[in-house]
Image (cartoon, rainbow, N blue to C red; front, side, top):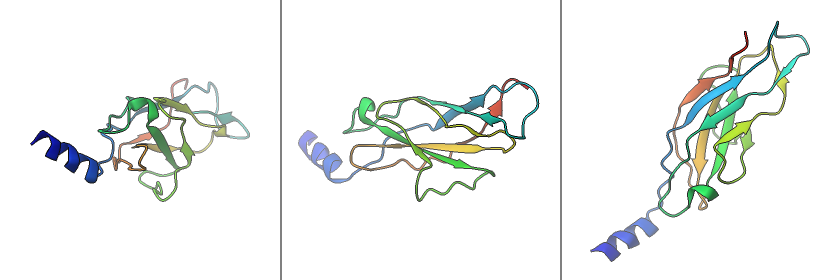
Length: 124
């Protein structure tokens, strides 16, 4: 019976188990906007997968400028394997950003969570 379950697990690919993005924060004191740029620090807990160790799971980061507007066709950023945080490149500070992070295993299977976090400036 155990071998049959293992065979089924190997034949029926499942995406990683992932709780999604925990936080998206930055610290930009003073007025925002103009030509000021900001980097957001995204954090999450590691995903788990039946076949791919957590150290080999990559994370696809999706960014949008309005809630729920992420396009899941192509990620905005992709992390190196095993990371549980990511810092965006500099972004215009006068725009509101929303982020979703999804885990992807070595077989290319991606979880489908929709946990969205708005970027928060902790220094205002």
